[in-house]
Amino acid sequence: MSASSRRSALLAWYDANARELPWRVGPAEHAHGVRADPYRVWLSEVMLQQTTVPHATPYFLKFLQRWPTVKDLAAAPDEAVMGAWAGLGYYARARNLLACARAVAEQHGGVFPDTEEGLRALPGVGAYTAAAVAAIAFDRPANVVDGNVERVMARLYAVETPLPDAKPELKALAGAMVADDRPGDWAQALMDLGATVCRPKGPLCDRCPLSAGCEAFAGGAPETYPRRTRKADRPRRYGAAYLLMRDGKVALVQRPPKGLLGGMLGLPTSAWRSSLLTASEAVAAAPAAGDWRHVGAIEHVFTHFALTLEVWRCDGDAAVDDVVWTPLSDLSVLPSVFLKAALAGLDRLI
Image 1 (cartoon, rainbow, N blue to C red):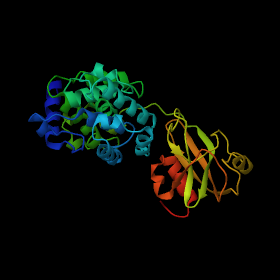
Image 2: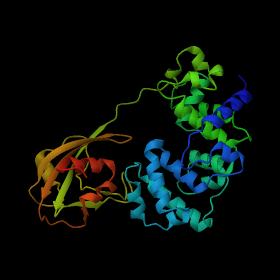
Image 3: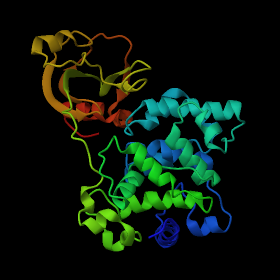
Image 4: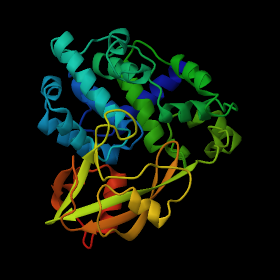
């Protein structure tokens, strides 16, 4: 199956099977000259890093309702954007989102650059996001390679090198298939193929427009690609989270602007370390003196470590500085690790 045959087959499949996504201009509209909004494309690509379409979509729609243009987002207060981002994880992306929006508004008059080079010059925009926006929003022949595309390439060519070492090879193989004809549709077709047909588990090879030329399919074990190097065990850390209650409100603190969960509201915590805290250590690290009682524990997994948080609760008028007293109904703004800890210490769900 030649490269041109693969392109024709995949684009024909995309024309008939493209996913309907709120940030996407479908192939039929695109063929009639409708172009994607660069703001929507950029916002969706940032949100979709490290999460799924079903999870990101309601956040995208909420952002678009509150901040319909990049200028609107640029003018938003930091805390409003960080609060709206809560639950998407990887909170450095929210800070980069604001930095990029403000650069586009202030330095480019609210208009996104239309080349990979121009996009890469924006704060927080990496190679993948620049390629995706250039291709999808501006029809530039950019090589857009995400995890879905890596998986498709690994199977098409039965690449034996395991990830992550295979990344340069997989990117080169994908790049060889990029052409000037419909580059935005091509990028989205590859993504859709990986997301809906060439799935990590249970690939639907009988529905794949490229199966006739797929080396992994011919070998009978497509699910074993891409090969992977065994991951090292994720280290575990331990700490205490504190649920300080007063008049139906919870004391939250603003985390430092940089670092993990930077700039977000969260429960007060002890330092996180490699060993469990004793009860006396946990009480000593509490944000205020009071009748603290152990009410549960939660587990949370970050990219580089797993965390066990023991949850301690205190009710009353404990004196504490620099907290934000927050109604229970507003705790949904918390990052998921703190929302889980809060729920573990409450008698009812939010």
